[in-house]
Length: 374
Image 1 (tube, rainbow, N blue to C red):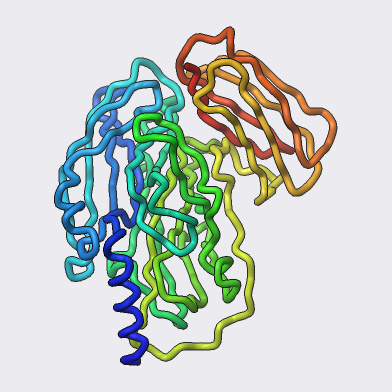
Image 2 (cartoon, rainbow, N blue to C red):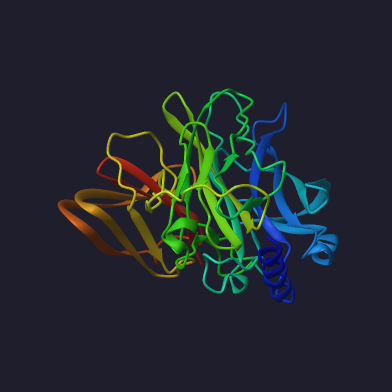
């Protein structure tokens, strides 16, 4: 045990020079009483108070993208220390009034992502969070409040770990959880987001044990980690009301596998992790489900020609619609022949600069991407 502990301390010491302070977080939108389009936007960031205390001390403000082409500065309103002050939960808040009803994607990007084993060159990629929500609801809606490990982010090597990431929801809407890939961005002010392509689920990296998230309860089970180090985990929280999706929140946490007290159990056979509900915004729970569904749009931001690519594990048809932020249809592409990949170039030259939404109906499963026209 002493040898393992020494090796773990050496591992941490070797990483300290490049260590950063971000351990995860999420974004929440809360309507202001008496005003249908005014919201309190809160970005919650989990920070490492040991390896990154100096950076955490200085992180007093962040830039928030509101999803309508504008940005604002949110200031730190609280800092809650947890797990014997080794980590903290930091809230940044700002009040914002939207010009009209619509669907908006809130985005926060921070530099120097914490180095983790399951992302190649993680510290060179921006740490990005998003929450997409609609204001087109009969009654105002507050997006869910994600849960986080109150006892910290540490788990023992060889020990089965269970984390309750269950959200709370003020209005009692239905919540569905899914494993996802972490997000990054081209720059802090770009207000875009895309999946980290080099990401691997923790047990896929080591090809041992299982890594599962209960889609209804939010319980995350890793049975069992075998290698010491830091691991990134991202989940989506989809909020449904009357069968319609009204928000999607991406939460990220960092799990630290160390040499902790306990008796290691038998590592179960390797079982590949499954990405849950699509990381694109979906608008209903459909019968068709394809965990490998991928909607790619580039470049984004775009000036003229937008490349749209749909990839699935099973042949299927697809319909793609481009709308403005108020939902008015501007263009439609129909792929009537079943295939595993559909590809088309869409001209954006005739549209004014601003924010647009690209909705794809792929075999009954709906995904969405936010498009920025320069």
